[in-house]
Amino acid sequence: MAHCRFIDFDITIHGQQTPYLVHAVYRQHMATGSLAADSTQPEWTAYLDHLDQARGGVGRHVLEEMGGLLYAHLFRDQVRDLWVRARTELDHAADLDHAADGVCIRLMAEPPAVAALPWEVMFDPEQNLAFAGSIQTPFVRVEKLLRHVGHVRPLATRLPLRLLIAAPEDPTGQIDGKAEVARLSAALGALAGSAVTLSVLDGRFNIVELRQAIAQEQPDILHLVTHGQPDGLLLWQHDAPVIVPASSLRVALEGAYSIKLVVLNACATGQGALGRRLASIGAQLLQTGAPAVIAMQYDIEENVASNFAQFFYEALLGGHCPGAVHRAVSVARSNLYALDPDSIGYGTPVLWLNAADGAIFEMEDQLMSPFLLRRPLPPSNEPDIKPLQRQRQQFEEWCASVIDLGVAPLPVALRAVQRPLQDALQEIDDLLVQLRRLDLEPVSNPVFKQYEEKLALIIAKQNTVNRLAAIIRDQQERPH
Image 1 (cartoon, rainbow, N blue to C red):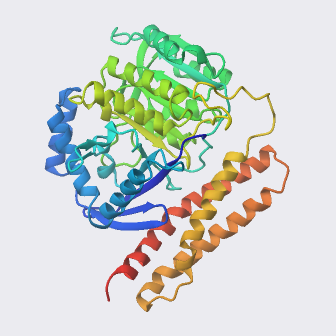
Image 2 (cartoon, rainbow, N blue to C red):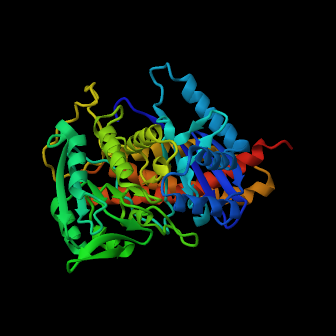
Image 3 (cartoon, helix red, strand yellow):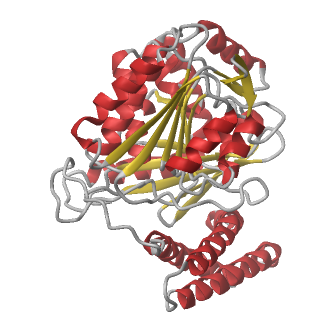
């Protein structure tokens, strides 16, 4: 995206019990550590119960206490050193033309008990800084294990964005769907019709009618405004309100290849279960191939949810980095924090981003104003393969940064680690060669599909390579 650049700080947490293994990657540097906290511990069980019972008004000191503990548990030893380096480079580069707009923290927490912690409220007590309050540190969650999330569609699309707002009638009268639609329309302002087209599904509709509306409108973004709970959303059936389970919502989105982003403006739709991976509705929608999902991990007041949606779309379409989903979520969180740091509202939205880049669209390089967006391109039957080619180039750069570890002379104790690393790197190299061959072929839907599938295979192997490389580097750096 023009004028915007984010450096990834990838954190992977895995293991069966405490202490969990933490693996961090920033630029070409890696660090390992451990995490001794999860949501089954009495301290965190009490905190999470308090969040559920407080219904928003938790209190700034309690939130900072929780956020400070999360920060201390995660950013320690090597991982803390790597994070300090990332922040220092970001601060020192602030006056340079090539400065990054921020460091994007990408968290992949494999253990369900770790994923259930309120990571979005992390707080740095030394800097007296809530991560959610800073737009320089977007925080996203990632799910990229192939056995849980297979093929992921590219996030990038072309303007105008097609936005479908689904706002079922609220039998409790607490949610004013029409007012929410009007507020979102006002947030889009003059961009409606040129940069974004808006369609609305309201009234007493059921899951099949939602599916039919998706098929008819082919939206890039599906925005649902309703009541939610960890295992379902409120819709209608036979003129009666019903809770539609996540499995039914997944069926409605299966094959909806146009959808790049799902926004669940509904309570508890981002709240998982301790014993099961991807238990929340939001996380399960990733399994439909959607590259980005926003959901709420706690109960959220209607005015806070409405404010979040307004801030998000204003930043997405007319902010400093138009098109950057992670930046737009960060701006919305920051605004909520500024309005009410005593409320958990700013830490309630969760963004899962299974895309290498957070840009859902890009600006023309020659356009200077963030409000002057690219004009819609003429219809074409050819898919846009350029975002996939950029992703392939990123993988080539990453692969070059770890290739030396596969051939380096190592002690006998490390050769058992080096062999699977060599095998994984060879498989990735073979896939990259195949992708470069596809670049020589005319763009077509079959070629596009092959490109996506091979990139998905690389993504599945990337975590293994990073983990093995971190083990080798960690041993090399230790004094003998």
